[in-house]
Length: 307
Image (cartoon, rainbow, N blue to C red):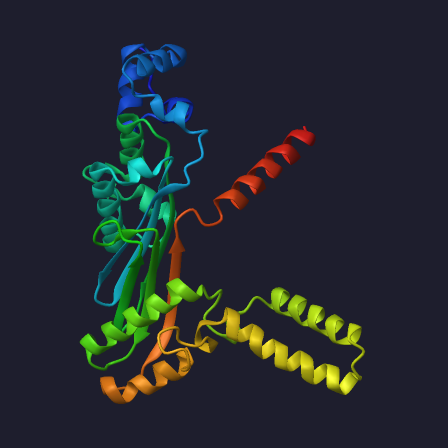
């Protein structure tokens, strides 16, 4: 009897996408013959995930869950919206999200986390084999505060906590929890609509900011403005740039006049304590998938060119 090593099991799983126990059982049945094990898994219908893995999964669902001072948003993709409306898929997404809320802080930790006796990654592989579509566990965002709340909002919700865009907003405060939760939801609705790129001026990517400043300088020079006027123009346009990309500098979409930073500061009187907007997360279904595929293709081409 051949020894069924972890390396052999890993190789079979990479070839077929089968779960760990299924791969081990198959290898045991065929005395370690990996080609025979591949055929066996295909015969049993447990290698379907491999056949689906090349298909782009850009549909699916974003799910959010909150427990007081902690919140999580998870994106799981499928090939079609039809699957996203499948109750079994929706229940799976909710279960994975609750697992992330309780025991995982990042994507790799979530893939390895236990879900009904097996890693989430294996449970997903089983679901792929059952439903017959490629699916990917793509993103997880988790926010926490010491005191206060993490509020949430789901846009285009298909059911409670599931939709196309999921937003989390973390407010640090010792004030009234119910009022903080209401404020966090309003800000989350704003984030869904306004699509900020960062929290504040300090978190703007330095290279991106300098690139913007350079473009604005070139525009001012092209307009023939004197240097001192050009500099003032650049600073004015940079303020508008920050108002576009920074959440705290944006104008609240609900009243269209109050800046988010002022909305938060003014809330202190209502909730009974100072409030700080610590962080936010915005997860939109399928966002950036095309770019990821282009980057991956470029990397594969580069590797092939280098032999």
